[in-house]
Image (cartoon, rainbow, N blue to C red; front, side):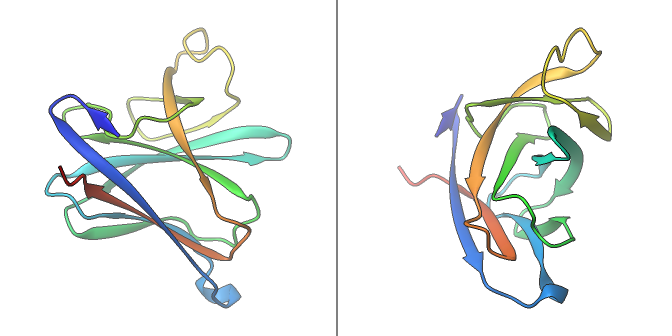
Length: 136
């Protein structure tokens, strides 16, 4: 996965855990601060939420309740606004903190379109996504 002069690699890991530890986390193993948004299917529609700022070598628990959706969608950009993951699923984001219901007509509704990566959590209770620099 490559965007511009920087390349990023997405690593995924699932963990079985008790209900108290159920979560979806994003860990940043790069040298840059990243901003993260997540989306999932809730109550018959897609919902996206953002932003979580994740520093280098830090993690953010972006979903704290039990994972009830098999697929979680992740979008990440650097602090300059440059997209660092190249996904295929179109969802809506906003420039400031947001919760957006629906994935259609982003611009008409005053939001920005973004391409999220799809993460298959395999219906585990806990999942972690690692953002890491790609090795050349």
